[in-house]
Image (cartoon, rainbow, N blue to C red; front, top):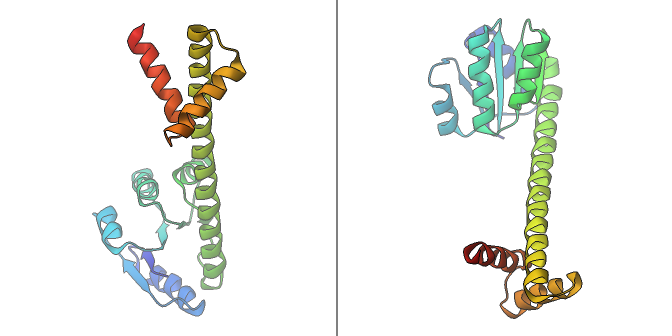
Length: 190
């Protein structure tokens, strides 16, 4: 696993790297410069990102949150001080582990595991949400098409659905595609 350690302070980065090495990780890449961070992370393409900010100001945190939104990798963030709004912003941005005043090499492995697990869970939930939204949108189009067919041809709901289904099967297309064609045609004709 390729791990990026983002930390402008070498002594703190040493603690993280030691914890990672103790946990058996070897492919560790340190980034000390904060400017151009997104580009460097894109080039490096790490599997996980560990960010240590010690006492960040709001601008630095916003930059880190933007990175976490765009990079789409498990991220653990270490800070020395924080408030509830910072924690909420970090979680909203997709930071999987936001650790306040907890930079100890013995904890790195567990924190890394937490960040990865939360990222995987969040990604799975996002995929499920997208699939559910797509299914709902398809269902709405099918219902609209049934309504159009019922009105235009005097069919019952079951007959309209059967006609959509039969057409989809005979054309080897998805039911929702046929339904969208019916809706589009009705919009053009009205």
